[in-house]
Length: 376
Image 1: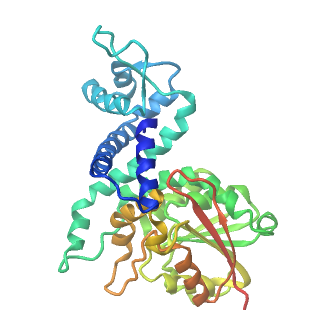
Image 2 (image 1 turned 180 degrees about the vertical axis):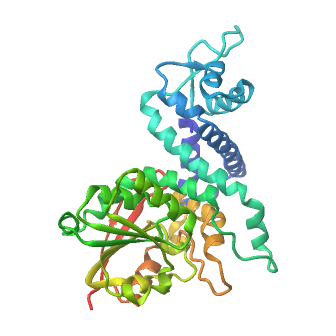
């Protein structure tokens, strides 16, 4: 986003937050921004997934659309159109004196200082494009007589796996701030992850703490199989994998684990309180539970003008609500269930909340690690 456009949006938000009346032209410009950047986000997702922006982020100098097409084994005409969208939007730079009326072929570049941000944005826009693929299915769920849920497919697990790569380091750092947890992991304890997906965070921790044993669980077989294959490829011998519904923890797992964690998953479950109770059952007395989730309020009024929360409500419409609304009585919390609701459910399950640790500034908005203890 250009400085001018960013300043315009900032001024609009400030006026809104101060309760000032916004003139119609500013509001119309804001609505144009919405569909303009929505269009550009699809272009960035395509450039990311076809390898165009990764090539630019590794290039030693500017590249033409022909060079990009050749390196990526792509059709030049498509490459040219999508990279022009990114260049005109300011996400990719045009080399000076190229692409003008003098006929010098346009050449594109991404400065070193911009590459991390562009890669992250491409990953997030890939998630948005994945949401678009199930637009029709979710639309049917709105109808009072339509279905209630659309379950995650392989493409969604792949998109979420890419996000896990970006977030693993920050989340690990936040988790290890809990007093004493690193020493326990160094010495060797029994650990379990609930709803692992493809298991990025568990793999990261298992590699860091080889003396601890990690039991990785999910209710869906396909991502669990990917997690198992990755562990085999990385030769991680301190991991085992189980298909598990955390609401139905087997008797043999009662008081089995020293520490359990769930990364961005509890709000995606149809019965979150029952899931937290399942975690409580599986923990040893004195055991710890780290619940990682989005750092927002449970109340929409408190989230007003928080654009990270706006993104989460939007994504929740296509991801979290359709995934969790599996039964008529499902709670379907959504990603903005918030700190207040989380603390309430943890308390009802019997946990003592020790504290909340911010995971750092995330590109999608901050996350928090809520560390709890089973004290009875």
